[in-house]
Image (cartoon, rainbow, N blue to C red; front, side, top):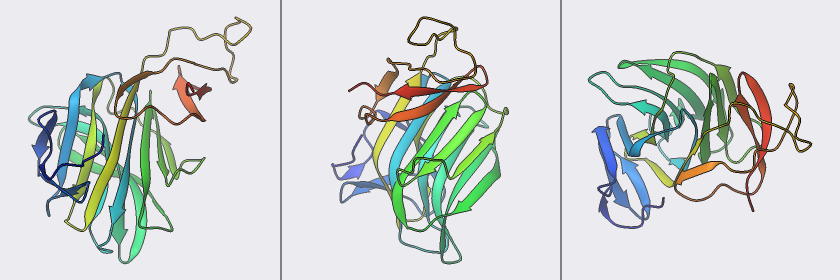
Amino acid sequence: ATFDAAGSLPAAWTKPFGSFTLANGKAVPAASASVAVKGPAVAADQVVEAVAAVTAKTSAAAGVVARYQAGAQPSYYFGQLVGRNGTPFVELWRCRQGVSTLLRSAAVSQWSGAVRLEVIGSNLSLFFANAATPAIRITDTQIAGAGSGGICGAGQQASVDNFRLEGRNLPATITGSAGLPLTPAFATVSSPQVLLGQPPAPRPVLVGHQGQYFKWSAPQ
């Protein structure tokens, strides 16, 4: 989803807290922490991606939200690009029942780029700037089940654009090209469930199933 219109986010977006305004084709968060999610809950295994940019190098942040589970005390994961003392970082956070915990951070070399959060089972991977390998990869079991995807940010010197959410329903048994059950190896899953935003780029990515990683090639 792109943000071409001026004003506020369209009605399809829910804003649990904070706010976003649309300017110059981008979603700009309020000064305080802001989250907006699009559509209903999707599969627990999901990929959320957006192009984030930060110009304030001390506190502004922009990123994506996965597995957002609404409630008086919501739970969700979020990955963001943020400025810390003049250095850009990507950070992976868990907010569980309203309590946010920084899981891991990694310094990066630029102030804008695609932030992609892959949440596959208990495997969390945060990619930045279309890198082939994640900047952060961890295991966390605190937030399970389906949830919504969306964007997050803080500070009007941050922005988000080109949002994409993909939910994946992997079968109970995955077979390789020869029709044999998979062992801890690689196989091709050819039909992901693309729910919102643009189709994924035609390149392989890693997905997890029953604690293992498999190679998935996006359809052409």
